Image (cartoon, helix red, strand yellow):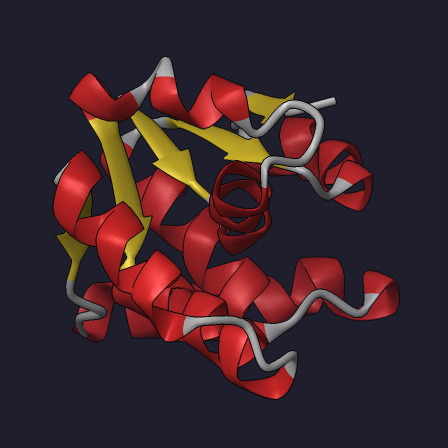
Length: 127
């Protein structure tokens, strides 16, 4: 199982380097509903066609996991570990979901690798 970060989904949608790796993991991929919101926020702010975002989620059938109480608690607690690196709530929600699911993480954000050992997670970079 692998949890896909918003940065990885955007790379796939925008055809960026490494984005094709997202499609290799769709059979066992999860994404937090918080990260889905991040993708739509990015599209809206950058005036990208929302239809492309809709199509990605519809056509891939990627499993969107609703943000629940356990994720909320762990996301908040991760602020202590990640505070100095400035990870966002969305970043921490992705890491929390991976931790709770004992899953790998797929991201385009290099800064996350420094938390691999502290969180006991395998963090894979797209590029």
